[in-house]
Image 1: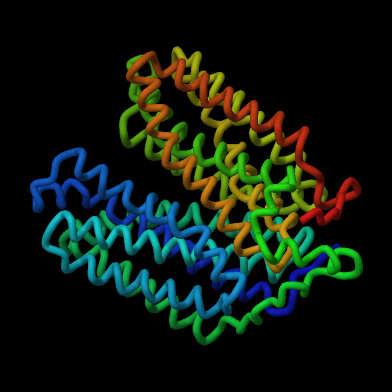
Image 2: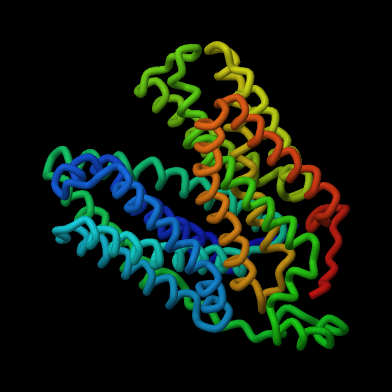
Length: 410
């Protein structure tokens, strides 16, 4: 069985902790937005700009961050990005206008995007085979924890000390964690272009070095990127937008507190699934990805027909279980099929597809709900997830287990 490289365990938890902090920084503003609206006299549209600016910035930085990961020391890039996150959060506490807030959110999105992309590349470097699947599942657990902690931290700090205190607390925690990583995280060498190749593969490598876009000659890489789009589309457009609308409909009638508890329970479920996801992904990457996307489709078919509380909870459990696999296994699969010399660039492209899905998902779903109904919107999410499952089953090759095909075509 493949093993993690030396000191990988400590580095894994340090890197996952740093990524969790970037998720915390995203969520800090959620509970304090109404307070900023009052202070700055912002409209609903302007608040939407504040929220989306973070995602747009991440969308723009993923590929450049991947290129940096392939050319420079990854530890240095990560620590610089974490330091920037901490500093920007502290500056955010001092802004006195809405547009300065937008600017700091853009800068935070750029810094956070660099940290996540380069850190994911680093995790792929220090693990291989089954250990990589476990590492990506652990990463997802930390991200879920960060997503949950951010709004809670922001709300508590704002309630006790005022809305600006949330950013001071977040910035201090980020800088402290960065200092720990500076001391404890081992240095990572800059990979030479041919470090992961041998024989005939090394002979064919120059064309790949001249243009990393040849990655798109590999149907498996395309399938991974399209899957990332579908996962984020369903997560942001489905779970965070559509499911909330359905939950508050008269037929379901959940209160905000009950719905919040439900989402928290799903997050705990996903964290508890980490060991299972790691073990399953040791024997196959392809099968759990296909099953997860099919389960997502089934869950949203159920959502399209919801007429009461029972069916709603059955559907949301299907979606929650699918998220446990679809969040981490596709990322491990993408790392498997990329040569080390292109891994940073490839993961940057993969994350760009995902963030684009997260950006357009709520827009498309909202338009479908306004123009037709929640049922139609849920059916569309189900159709997209099912189509991606079928495309991945047909196009993608297996990368671990008995059916693995280690064929480098770019």
